[in-house]
Image (cartoon, rainbow, N blue to C red; front, side):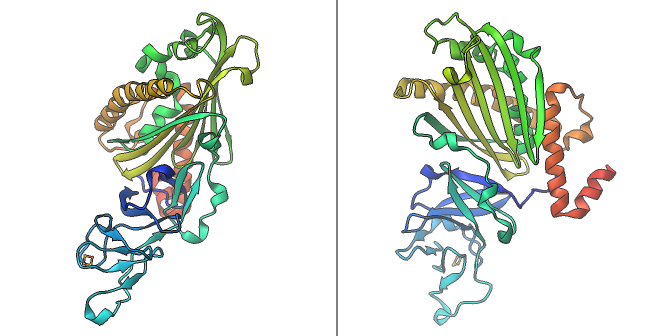
Length: 350
Ligand code: FES
Ligand SMILES: [Fe+2]
């Protein structure tokens, strides 16, 4: 399996889900402890005590913001340094420390940097400002998949699967013939489909005054490494400006837990029904049925069939619908190579 790219921002969680409780999470196969110190700032340190390897999230946060190991009471501060040893007359060995990770709270997301801290530039965090836009309404959640994050990204980067896997929600017969444009700016990919003058797909029709009206429909995705997707799916009455239309913006943030499991943080932001809790419920249900019951079993079944072998080694048949996903894989391979030059020569030789 391909190595993880470390020098990137990864989503560690929704900011609203992290309070003073200690949260243990595995990211890039490393145990991480997330919590908020008394000032309210969220921090991330290594999640395993270096004494006898107790999980630190089972401990407690002390008044000074340090974390006490639940097993024999060593305490660690936000920098990962051991600041108290209740044994050995208080002597603190040099090895008594855990990792600490740069953590930035932005757009309602906690972004963690798993690589060289000197390279952690918050300006590189992709824009997900719709999540906290007060003029819109957002429903958020998270789920977990038994699949490598690149296989999950394949699903999000090729939304033509909606015609089959989610035909009951998003059927729009013209999508398969619509022109699919994929472009790249730096390390960012864009995938766009424009489907003019069709009967509104069901998920949009019910928001229209006339549910049988014809609309111009768009499906766009932006991808940034490692697996940060911003989707923009909308419909406006045929010929009318997009801004008059109904728009659902999604963030789909994939964070590898291990090589074969993925944390998936998602949000759906809408510009209609802003006060409607029943619409929130409908969106949650949409995600439950659309993703958890349709995408997730398919993605996990694909992972099982692929059996941990890299996609290209299996010689898949590739179509134009795969263009964005294949470019994303190439960008990740390049980033891996930049971090670990011997990997790129290996991948090139294969
Ligand atoms: S395992 Fe943490 S203090 Fe012993
Ligand atoms: Fe899907």
